[in-house]
Image (cartoon, rainbow over all chains, first blue to last red; front, top):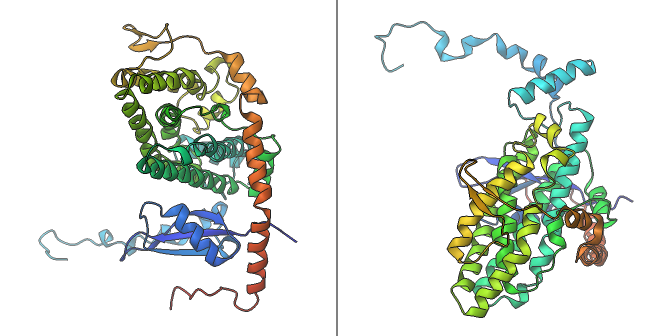
Amino acid sequence: MNNEEPLWEVFIRSKQGLDHKHVGSLHAADAQTAIENARDVYTRRMEGVSIWVVESKNIHSSNPDEAASLYDPANDKIYRHPTFYNLPDELKHM
Amino acid sequence: MATEELQKVFDDKIAEEIRIEPKDWMPDDYRKTLIRQISQHAHSEIVGMLPEANWITRAPSLRRKATLLAKVQDEAGHGLYLYSAAETMGITREEMVDQLLSGKAKYSSIFNYPTLTWADIGAIGWLVDGAAIMNQVPLCRASYGPYARAMVRICKEESFHQRQGFEILLTLCKGSKEQKEMAQDALNRWWWPSLMMFGPNDDTSPHTAQSMKWKIKRFSNDELRQKFVDVCNEQADILGITIPDDKLVWNEKRQHYDFGEINWNEFFNVIKGNGPCNKERLAARVSAHENGEWVREAALAYARKKAPKSPSGEFESFRN
């Protein structure tokens, strides 16, 4: 039996109104211990008001080697940006 | 992609100051170098708790006890940030712990010196943390993302460590004759080992050139050591105690302090395991690990027992 405690990724909301942000990872036997450890490791100086922990094995990520093709569809669609449109300088409030 | 192409993508990123992230291709030696450096750094934080923990129960006031406890707890946190950063490179926590406990992995030789008096806690904060900060600030720009991010966090927390140490020494230096002598004695014992923390001279440092090419290191050992000597001399004047080096003198031409030769025999001897406390430090880590075995086992057994009923435990989903 594997005796290594699973790895968890830790996300912290620094204050109400902001997103949870990834801050690092830690090992813990279960979710509750992971949250308690995250409190001790990542919020010793009032860095957070809320903690998420996600077992690392449950996070799936894109492959950086495929970044070029993965993001290619966005490259040639500059008409998605407001600056693409030619409008007169006199036009205000737009 | 062929290896040459991948190498070129990697080299371009390094040249353009684009951070390397865990899933990016990287040369084997880059990975090996970083695993060695980050894990040694983590071990140093963990072993570094021992000489200071020695004084927690004997701190001279509640204020000193509370700050020393907080500092030692920070060191544990720093060790964890760094172990996590190393784990992103494919080594497991268990492997690293095994390497430390079996004596295979190194940690900073400074922690193999004893803390004989309360003034040593002041000297560690001022000099050992001071030297560590000098080393660590440039590492916040290291080319490997997880390492650089861990270092940013560590550096933020580290500055209180140095200030609490200096305050301890300042209080002693303003106290009785005996207290000031105690501060001087601590400086005498910790000065040279602190200079050794920057590692061997540049011409004998095996890894420096390559690490600088990879932008893991930004300054050489000797450059950082010189910066440290330059700032410490003025700080010793404020304390009113003397750095134990009769060759320490301002060099107008270089605009730096000249200083005496480090006893490199002592340095290599301590690294080999023959310092005053090597055996004691390792024994303390082994004992902590072995005596904690039942706690880890119990925690895992409890987690397994609870797991099948509700996979997410008793915590509500964040969307609820």
